[in-house]
Each structure stands twice: as structure tokens, then as C-alpha cells.
Image (cartoon, rainbow, N blue to C red; front, top):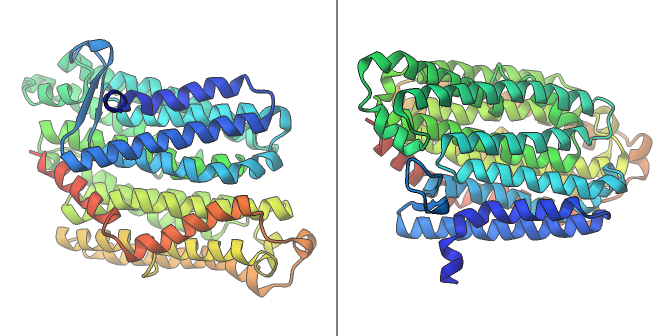
Length: 498
């Protein structure tokens, strides 16, 4: 057991990576699904093991690949922040697995199902690699692994526009990755190192003439990562990608991919530049604040006018990313706590929303709002889960979404930005509109078309959905774990700033 514990950081990546390779050789979807269950559940166990260990000791875990010392070798470094994110990513994947068997069988042809699970596991491995590695170029490698797998996952959707959505994401993702690696090149030029923590130490002693390339590196890194996390106005790839991808892929990406990109942004801002420079001296918080507000309001308005429920939730995801980056922009204890806890809360809430739509799609074959007329009467538990998760997106007290917005509101007041509280409230009211449109169609209209003969979702899909719905309520009432862990992470990040 002790020997396994020493290698937990590398096992977190190797387990899904190896099962992805094995799944690629399967011919039957059931075998691919079984390997995906093993890979995701084992990765979740490793991630939670790491989180418990880091939380208990309060010390980061350093794992040197090949025994090479920093800065020559690649280091995996696990602290409270990335252990929290790794646990979140693997938990979403683990909960999705029982749901995936029927959903994938319904939406993807038999001969391609094992390949879907292989790409799913490969994407998971890439995201976890981005989370635990402390090497800037290694982040780029894992970013490309997860991105390439994501392009395939999106392209496997049955809608004729799935290929176009995947191609759009490929173009934007390539640009984002290019910007990121250019930013890493600037930092390597200045410091001669690729280790994130070594870069932070060396930037602080860089001569004044290197200030401009350092700022250029920060700019390229920020834009590249913001393309990946779909911050407004760099979000145009996301609505189509989420709308036309298979439901399991959409729920997984909404709950994990953008969260890992946000993690990377936090790491760059607070663990590298925030350590080397006074964060207030960098032109980051104000710019990020403006785009966060625009995301919260404008993409919420876009969601309110959508007729396709999956596209509606996709625009909602961009708005929710705005809440998270708002917490980063505030850069104080309450604001950053709100942003980090919303990483967790939004992952559970949005995965539940997409899973409920996937169940409706499984029974009726459509997720246009008009075609969902009366579905609440035919699928009461599925739509009850949608309503509860929708209340979480709105931020109703008693749900996890309220906790996030409460901290963000306090952070805004502490910063003296009291109008931001009204912006948070206004964007929440817009969420009432777009969630309300689905609720109105599902409960206050007569069933039409395939909805007339629809019935409740299968238990294998319903139980994971209800589990995430229960989590939406639980973490809205009992915040002792999620908010306290997020607060501790925020305190550590802010404590390391100049």
C-alpha cells in the first residue's frame, strides 16, 4: 500500500491512459464501457486519496519522473488546488459511467461505441495530466491529448452539424494551444526553465529589461487559456460543440474541460505571476472583470432566446464561466472562494442538467423546447431533477449555486464594487427566464408527438442523475466541505502573493 501511495500522482494519469488504449482494441461497446468504468472509478479513487492526503498534511506532494531533478526533469506536483480539481473531474466521470451505457448505445452506432469510450478515457487522462503536472510544456502536451480526443467525441454526434462543430473547435483549440505555447516560449526565454514553480522564483529576479517579454508571455498565456475555457468573447466554439456532441460527451466536457482550463488560469495568475509580481501591477484583474461581466449578462441573454435546450445550456455554461472568472478577477478571500467553489458546484449542476436532457432525448428523440411539451407529466423524476438543477443555476437559496453567488457578492462588496451585486442578481434573473421556458413547456403544455408515449428514463440513467441532483441540494445546505476546502485553497493562493 505504501508503494502505491508513493506513485499516486503518476497513477492518476496512467490508469485512464492505459484503459483508453485497451478500449481502442475492443470491438463491442459493452467491453469498452466496462473498461471505461474501471478507468474512471480507479482514477476517482486515486484522486480522492490524493485530496485526503494533501488536506491532512497541508503539504504538496512532489513526484519527479525518472528521478531527474528540477528544472531539467518533469515534476508532478499535487497541492490542495489541483487535488480538488482532480477529484472533481474524476467524480464527474465516475458518476457519468452508469448513465453512459444506455445513452451511448442510443446515440452512437455499435461499431463506434468502444472508440467513443477510448476517446473519453483519453480526454480524461489529458485533463488529469494538465491538472497535476508542474511542467509548462507538459501542460501543452496534455492539452493537445485532451483536445484531440474532444474533437473526436464531438464529431461522433449524430447530428449532421456535429462534424462542423468539431472542426470549429479544432480551429479555435489549435489557436488557443498555439498562443499558450508561445507564452511558454517567452517565459522560457526569460527564465531558462519550464517548471512552473521554478519559473515563478526566477521571474521575481528577472532584470527590468525583461518586463516586456514577461508581459507578452502573460498575454499569450491568458488568451490561449481563455480560448480553452470559453470566456466571452472567445466562446463562439462552445455552443455548437455542446449542442451537437453526444450527451455523455457534453455532460462530461461541461463538468470538467472548462474547469481544468480555469484551474490553469488560476495557477498561472496566482502561483506564477502573482508570486513574482504584485498582482495589482499587472493589467489582468480589470480586463478579466469586464469580460466576466459581459459573459454573465450577454450569454445569459443569448440562452434566453435559444429554442434548442442543449444550446441554451451551452450559452448558460459560458455565463457560469463568467462567475468563476469574476472570483479570480476580484482576487480577494471571499471572491476567490466563490470562484473556486463554483468550479465544484457548476460541474455537478450542469452535468445534471445535460443528463436530464439526455434522458429526454433517449425517450423522445428531441430536445427542442417546443418538442418537450408535456414531458414533465411523462417523465416526472427526470424533469424534477432538471428543475432542481435549474434552481441551482439560478442560485436559489438551498442549492449549491446560491453558495457560489453569496461568496461572489461578498467579495464584490469587500472590493467596493457594490454595483456588481446587482449584476449578479440580474444575470440570475435572466437564468429564471431560460430555465422557466423549459419548465413551462414541460409542465404547462399538452404532450405532443413522441412525448405522448414517453415514459420515465431507465434506472441506470436515472440514479446517477438523481445523485447529482441530490448533491445540488446537499452542497447548498451543508457547505462544511466544499466551501471550507475552497476557502482554504483561496487563502493559500492569496497568501503566496506579493
